[in-house]
Each structure stands twice: as structure tokens, then as C-alpha cells.
Image 1 (tube, helix red, strand yellow):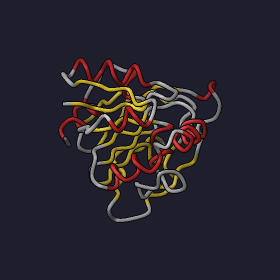
Image 2 (cartoon, one colour; image 1 turned 180 degrees about the horizontal axis):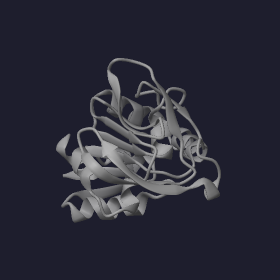
Image 3 (cartoon, helix red, strand yellow; image 1 turned 90 degrees about the vertical axis):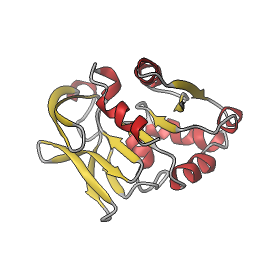
Image 4 (cartoon, helix red, strand yellow; image 1 turned 30 degrees about the vertical axis):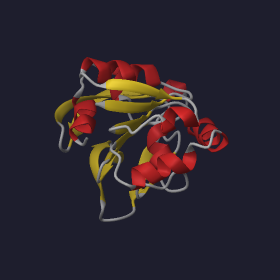
Length: 182
């Protein structure tokens, strides 16, 4: 199993380490030729800075090929900035409206434990300058986790989006879910 990890900026190495522990081969996507070396069984859009990542996706010619692959059913896990990239106004493959930096600056970062539908209870959630989902925009998309009344994870078909960073904790259930979609 080959999983592409967007490696333009942000917390991509930690995702690679989790996926490799689960037996997947990971391929860093830094340029169009990396993407064209596919096919890939899944894609991870990591945390980082969504504006920078979106600008680089455009400049490197990756935006449309990645958008088309996701729209065509490629399983994808978008975390934090990756969730923003999946949302309306960005890649637009997931029917969600996201509030960027909803939990404030770096000092607003926190850790909690909660339930994620389809995953289980006691899922560790590490939030770093995190967004949250303001609204799920279609019946095809559903909220799968909330914290303090805010949607922090959603799923639409083969797309999983989280406001938190599952790669920063020892729990591998979200990455296992991604692999199960392949």
C-alpha cells in the first residue's frame, strides 16, 4: 500500500511515521513529478499553514490533479490545515465551512480526549491553533466528533477531516480508518 503525504510544509513526517508503523509505504509529495509517480492508495494533507500550502499547490501545478483524484474517490485524511484545504473555498471536495484559527493563537492550543463516530471513545485530540467546522453543508457529509459544541471532525465518503492532530498521539485509529478505505 502506497500512501502519498503532502510534504510542502507542516507536520508531514509524523504522519509518515504512523503510517509506516502500520505497514504502509509513504511517498512525500513535493512536486508535480512526485504526484505523477503514482498511483497512490490514499493521501494525507497534514497540518501546517493552509494559505501557504494552497499557494504552493497552485504554484507547483498540484492543485487540480489532487482535487481531481479526491473527487474521483481517492481516500484522504486532512488534519488541521489539511481539513481547511478540503473545505469549500479551497479544494472544495468536502462539504464543510471551516473557521480558521478558531481556537486562537499558539497559546490557545490544548489537548483533550473524546469520542469519534466510527473510531471509538477516548480518542486523544491535540489542537494547535486549530480550526473547527462551522457548518456541514450537505447530507453527504457528517460530523463525527465535537468538542465543546464545535464540530472538530467530519467524514464524507472517502474523506476524513479533523481539526486536531492524530499524528501527534500514540492512538493510530484514524490512520487505520484511512488505510481501511483503500
